[in-house]
Length: 329
Image 1 (cartoon, rainbow, N blue to C red):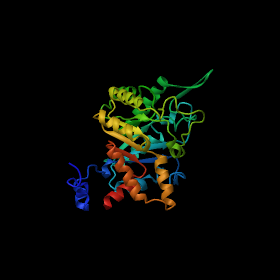
Image 2 (tube, rainbow, N blue to C red):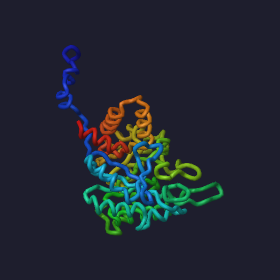
Image 3 (cartoon, helix red, strand yellow):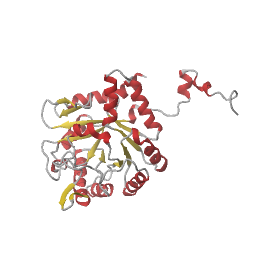
Image 4 (tube, rainbow, N blue to C red):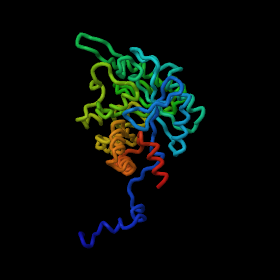
């Protein structure tokens, strides 16, 4: 049957009707808030390319945690900026590293907060790459298998500090398998892995690299992060991580890759996570500061679009604002 018998507007006539038939919901508990911890004291430094996002020293970190938990956010993703860097990222896997100290502090004060540890080497290496670099005649090469050993050490140290979830973002082949085996052998069989299963070599990471002090000092990351043109490859990456024991699958970035989110959601019964990344955040903030857009409306529409595409969980720098807006609704 068709018009006039069928009138789709019948279900849009009031707020109550629209709520009754709404297909997709966005909840505060769907959101993960990233935080950046840094060495030093008295540091609350706004990241210039990410208005409203700060570096926090541990003595002031409780201010941010209070702001996060007061909005009902239950999960955070911890990134660390160390005081020193070397060729293998030693401070990534030290028990007194900035991330490990932050995790212990957070769990001591907020034991019910789900603490997710980003597991990578890029912000801890002096060359800014996500693994061990060897120089060869034809240039620098990221040593995949040697990097796995250091990433596993990092994950174990983070779990020992009290992390609830390990989130490896390095895109080395076999990283889930290596970290799963390492965690299990160390007695952390109960710690899930939130794998950055599909991570593209994206231009959308620019502001984050300022925040994490993790820009590569030479070359790029295209030999280990994915080509933005590829979709079938995303399925291969995800399938490998599923077979290796991943408990969550992340797609990063978000907006330009919602087709990938849908593909993974349709194929895998694991929770699908989308990362609403730094440049996606910064573009909205820049336009809002100019008065060109309604920030609240744009953010909530973007996040509901990510949920509609199949994401179960969203990592977003908008988390505090979005949570407040949802609570106000």
